[in-house]
Amino acid sequence: MRYRKVYSKKHSVGFHEVPEEGSMAAADDGTLTQTPAADAAVLYEVRDGVALLTFNRPQRLNSWGADTAAGLYAAIDRAEADPEVRAIVLTGTGRGFCAGADLGSTASMQESGVGTENSETDVSEVVGERPPHFLTELRKPVIAAINGACVGIGLTHALMCDVRFAAAGAKFATAFTRRGLIAEHGITWILPRLAGWGAAMDLLLSGRTFLAEEARELGLINQVVPAEHLLERAMAYAADIAANCSPASLAVIKAQTYRDALDDLAAVSARAETLMYESLQRPDLIEGITSFFQKRPPNFPPLT
Image (cartoon, rainbow, N blue to C red; front, side, top):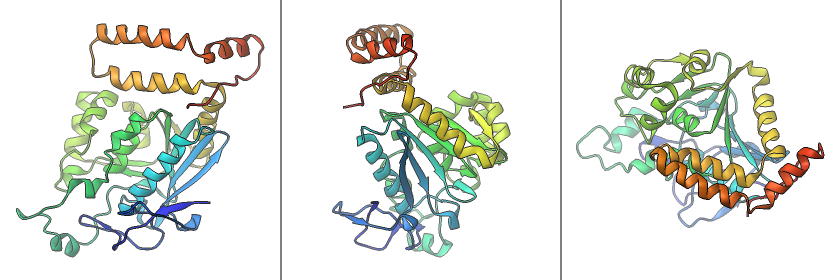
């Protein structure tokens, strides 16, 4: 059974116009109502310990709107809370992963006062209640399977995933300078760390389109895969993690990696010593060693 949160008012977000059909948006009172899977803005299913989350607005190249934001948050929360889920894969239907924000019509933007000194647009209404870096704060690894157009806020979300696979020929762009915007929520932090300062400045300032193959060369993508094998490859990678890696170790190492990027080496080393001591107290260690010598798959306990 799949659910959606529903607005008590028309589905819209800031100056974005979002189609009513197939939406999943947040309710003011948090009420959940059932919706057919085909109509959900974000699809959810679990396979082999992996939650597969799929942006599902193919008619708009899965552009970002209120329904997509709420659908992603609900699906992520569900995956994080499910002890059977040990890894998450994020992808899109059709020709796009997420082609940026749904900017709607010029008329609707003007009605909202956007582009004037009188604009009172709430940024959280444009990008959603959670900045994209919330993906880095999850306990479970998130793997992006970038099947097509990955632009703007779609690119920011993809870069905040832990590992990225992309279909050969998939198109990428920051695009902010070409829309009169600034670099949003954290992309100026993550992009230079992945691609280096010079490449990041090129992509941010020019807003040019580049392909998956260049993204791989720059370090933005881990693997470029033929489109017909993309989801299979990403799911197999995630399923291997789910079957063979300790959920507790995954959670700690993920938190370490992002937190340590903001700290100095001495503090990082001291904190790692404490975390290592804690890991020695968990049953995961005995299971990991025992299963290795018994040449069998490990049976690690789930996160609690």
